Length: 248
Image (cartoon, rainbow, N blue to C red; front, top):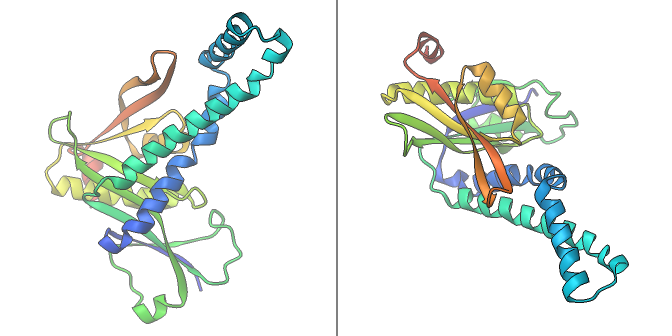
């Protein structure tokens, strides 16, 4: 039996699975960001300040001050982890609006890697009945929500987006974003906006190939100007010929 994926509208019964998907997706970037932050200037500054406090004010020998390095690294890891976790909780609690999910149907005995498997993609209407679907194990592997942009006039904003990293990104996201574009054009929006961070390389490549262009690049401050995350706001014109072709 060939596995398949159904892209459909979100229902209230999907909420718990979507929250878990969002949490796992956000937390998947925490380790990468931690290793990058280890080589940022603020990490060295933190270690030097800690050494100075122990050596000058507490009289700890310089050799023993070196033992504070693992503690500083642990504090950095803890801070990074909980910053991503707080963002995940924020998105988990956000009420979805105009949402789509990608529900994957796989055989119960499925030894093939999801990225190597070939999936049939069905949008909105699945040709199989419920009796046939019970022969498969089902799980939600991607979710995307759209709402009015608070700063750009007559624009829709992609938010609460998540995808299982074990599944093929391009195969799943291309039809989902096309359906989002179609719905936004039907809703009378002029553009579709999204924001990605510097950790989301695959997402950036996908949006570039899809036709999104960069509106602005900025740095979101976490700890003053010493620690910041680069963000990119992308925009896609919904009144172009390309967008109208994708709608059809």
